Image (cartoon, rainbow, N blue to C red; front, side):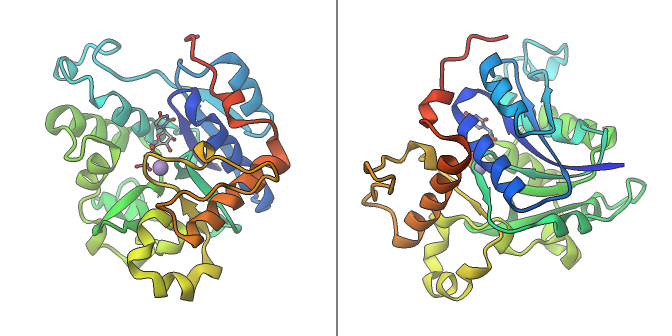
Length: 279
Ligand code: UDP
Ligand code: MN
């Protein structure tokens, strides 16, 4: 069966991120499919741009208290966005998926990720069919911006049930996924991806010598936090305008994001951030 990279757009504002990610995957010469999950809030014109580079643009219904009869969801509107990411586990047309947040950038071919998470769906230990890299803020938790999984109704329903019954301890998908795959940190090493597959430049500087030592080995960069590469200002020559809180290294990585943007997309990110009118 087909294997695919999947990212997610819950609105138009991350569209340039998803596009840059897709072009960075193409530039890595991947042999896998590339798909994007979009909610009804993503506009027609943006779907057209996505179709030019993604193999599949897949509409997913938003799961929230208005769209489901599940009584447990009533009065829990904050679960909406969290639940949207678990749609990845419902994409059973793919045998294995590497999920990437729309704010990630692929620097090298990472198709070897599809060799991880080999546990079967019958296996009682669900942690074996999931792989992710540690979160820099709490390394016993994984960061949910990059993960490998085998889509199945079993895990999709399991995640849905857990979300509606227990909620999520951080208010987002990362808390829920860490509760569901709770044995991740004690699991087999093949399910624990190196940090180089989900390097978060905003957090990595607490160990700056390690960054100097390993920076040439980065595979995937993840621009976590509220200020994304497409929001950076630039000089007329295209170089990014350094923010006073940013290190030299993170400026270099944001510049790499922009280089992909200029090379394959062009224009301005705001061209992709038109107001959503629904669908
Ligand atoms: N997302 C989106 N629109 C939003 C917020 C989030 O499409 O307004 C999607 C997108 O794929 C994004 C992911 O949900 O990468 C997780 O959110 P974000 O990356 O902002 O979280 P962080 O990694 O900063 O914790
Ligand atoms: Mn992210």
